[in-house]
Length: 373
Image (tube, rainbow, N blue to C red):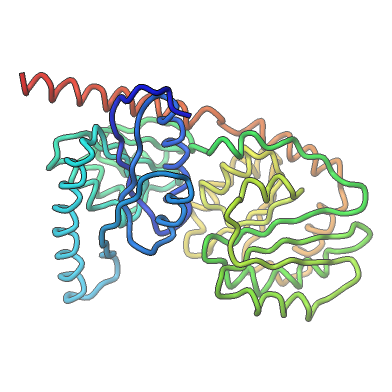
């Protein structure tokens, strides 16, 4: 809800994964209550376009290409796309009269972040992971300030960095506390916006072995391309104690968490923060190629007893199934984990970041007015 007073426009940019979109939407939500407008620059026909549009934020599309692991010719094309998109982003910033660019990470945000220098406004970077990403490390040379969720991420950044936590949308913070039903445990599997082939292949068998006296009801987000295959895997391991629903993508993740008792997920920083804000116990399976920072993201939850961590290669082994069976069968432990998770959540992160962004943006507006005068 807006205050009705227009204070300026903050232009967000980032995409590729939900982790590069949802934190920005959480901050945009808070800025709008303070009288600021929000817009978003990302790629056409992308995940970020779908998510941002569904949130009611003005979305503008520009091309962007990654530089990592590219040959010489592809790097040249990526550089040309970056230069052209940066110029187009600068034109959009002028049109919006942008007071600040808020970059949420990934190569998608590079054109708008660089265009902030051409436009003469501030650049705020958000780094929610335990280790800073390559895009943010590069763009930090041009940034006014960065907000980090872990002190370890600040060392890789060239700009001033403040410890701010991970911004989470209000819908997660408003989820009711966990109340278990008498006859079943409802498990939600989140494999990321595109799903996880490893989780799709290995979790049905684990749940079948873990199901016992406590009936297990699974809702499994498989990714749009893997729905039929994942359903087949649940059919192959069918057991009386296990029922399953497979869906390609969950638009309302907060609503899904509200309806479930235990979350099985990768350990991306944003997902960990959302699960904690929701007050739900979790089983985290770090992505092997990003296991270092994903373990770091989940460490506080695991050490406090709000979650357990299972390595991907352990999912098909009997000890992992026994750990999950004990967890599913221990209702008091699930309730205690839920309380601990919510107690560890930093629910004021989105509001705190929005307040800081307002300060930087207003300082920039005042500076430009002074130069104009």
